[in-house]
Each structure stands twice: as structure tokens, then as C-alpha cells.
Image (cartoon, rainbow, N blue to C red):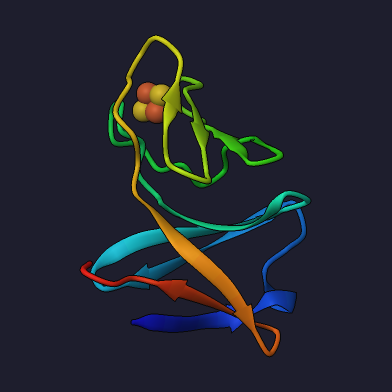
Length: 103
Ligand code: FES
């Protein structure tokens, strides 16, 4: 199931916007590397990833700095190896859609 969340123009460039979808906090991130939809909860100590520094397809947790690859959710660093959930995104007619099958 693809969920339409917002026009791409409403996601700031090199920025984020948070949505509540299917009972989850989903962080939609827009960078030069693309548009990503990730779980807005770090796998280390469950802090929000919103506000984390962005670099390409990486986001750094603002709490303790673990870096996550927003393409597959994998964690880099010593604090955790647990990935975060990521969802597919697609821009359809200028609107960001998120695939949340099975969520
Ligand atoms: S809560 Fe994210 S790195 Fe610790």
C-alpha cells in the first residue's frame, strides 16, 4: 500500500518533516541523494532522529551520533548495530508516497 504524504515542495531541501502514519512516527528526509522515509526512532536509545545532521544518504542521531544509512537503515558506529526501519519512497505527480506494506 502506497500512502500519499505530502507534495515534495512541502519537504524542505536538505531537511525533514515528520508524519504520523499507521501509528508510527515517520521522518521524511529530502537531500541531494534523494527522498527517504525512515523510522523516527534511533535503535540505540530510542531518541528521535528528527533534527539529526544530514549528509547524502546518511543521518546522524542527534543524541549520540550513530550514523544510519537511509537506503537500508543500517547503523554505523560502535553504539549499536541494530538497523532502523526504512520504507520505499516514490514521487508520483509531485507528491511523496511511502510504501508501508505489512506495517
Ligand atoms: S539514541 Fe541515537 S545514538 Fe544514542
